[in-house]
Image (tube, rainbow, N blue to C red; front, side, top):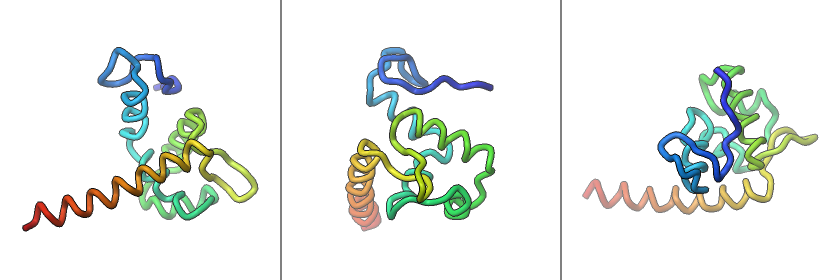
Length: 111
């Protein structure tokens, strides 16, 4: 099955409007996309290192997700391996804040 590049302004899963937030959530909601992005938070990784950090992801799926993230201009591939673009770094900062928030939420929910 061939998937088209996720682009704001074009319909995506769950939205016919193509609103940017819906396009982003569609991209991040694909299996392993968010995990691959998260694992790059400490710096660039080679394909093999990223695959090891992601656990049981198949090379085919990882290749597909990396291509989607590259098409979305969130990561690129350089001498050090896969790493964030400027947009990817900004998104990672937001995800780190969301991670901190979710920790507080989980702690409060368990009271």
